[in-house]
Length: 415
Image (cartoon, rainbow, N blue to C red; front, side, top):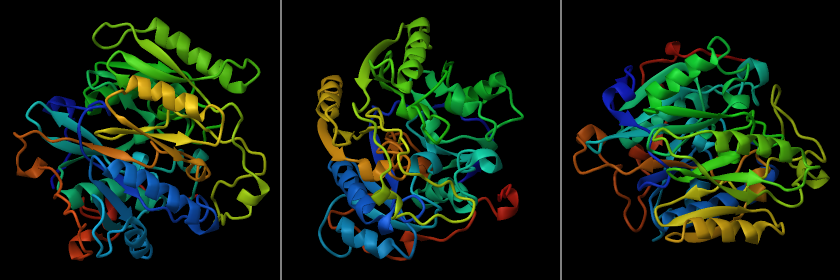
C-alpha cells in the first residue's frame, strides 16, 4: 500500500456510482454499548442478515474488534464451517459505521481502484460530535487499505464521511448544506472551498447542494438518508405528503433544488419519491434501558424520533437490501425500489435494531468498486474468499496502528 498526497482527480480517478459493479463490501461488527443496546444482541442479528444478503453476490469483509471477532465468526458461520462469502478481519474501531469510517473508493479508466482516507471526527468533533474519542475510527480507512492492498489518498485534515456524499459516477455529486457546512467539520473553509475539494478528491464536475436531510438525523443530515442516485440522471428522494410532518418542508426544499438543477452532463434530474415510514420510529422506555453511555457521548431519550428512511438501502451486485421498520409503508418501499432496480433481487431486512444505533443499512456498509483487468499489482482486487471462508490467522489481525507512520500525524481531539 502506498500513501498518496496528490488529488485523485488530477491522477485520473473518479468516484463511481454505487450501482456500478463491486469487488466487495466492508462492514464492522457492532459492539459499542452507547450505540447498540442490550449487548448488541439484536443489532448483530440484523447485521448478520444484511451481510448474508450482500454475500449472495459479492464478498463481505467484516471488521471486528479482537474481543468480538470470534463472536462474529460464529454468528456469520465462518469459524471452520462451510459458509458464505464472508471474511472476518480483526481491526479496532470505535463503532460500526463502515460508510463513514472505511475508505471512499475511486477508480480510473485503467481499472485501478484506490481508497480515500478522510479525517473522521465523530460527526462534529468538539462542537457537536457524538462521542468523545474517535481515534480508532479515524484509523480504519488507512488500515482497510493496508489489509486489502489498496493505495490510499490521505485527505487529512479535510473532515468528511462517506454518508455525506453520493455520486452518479459521471461527475455529479449530491451533498447537504446542513452537513458539509456544519460548524464541527471544516469551519475554516467556505462553501466554495469545500466544493473544490470534493471535485479534486471525487473527480466531480458538478456538486448539487441540497439544503437539508432527514429530520432529526444526528449526522447533521447526511445525504444518503434523504436522496440517492439510482442511475445517472435519476434519484430517489425521501418523501411525505403530510404537511404537518416536519419532514415535509425538508423534502420539499430538496425537490425544488433537484428540479431546478442539471447534472454534470446537462441532464435534468428525474426524481422518484420514496415515502418515509407512515408512523415515526421513536425510542421506547425499553430501548433506553439497554444503552450504556460513556462520558462525553451523545445520549437518547424516551420518545426521541429516529431518522428512519427507506433511502438508506444498499445495492449489492445482484441485490438491493432494503430497511424495514414494521410500518405500513414497508411494502410500498420494496415495490418502488424493486421497480427502479428490476435486475436486482430485493432483500427486505428488519432494520429497527440498526436504526436504534443512529443509522441504517447504507450507513453500516461501504462498497469496494470492481477493479478492471488493467489494474496493477498495487490496485488488484482483494484476496478471494474461499467457499469455506478463511480460518482466522495473523493476516486477518490489524491492531490499532497508523499505516502512515505514526499517530503524530493525527490531530487528536478529545472533549
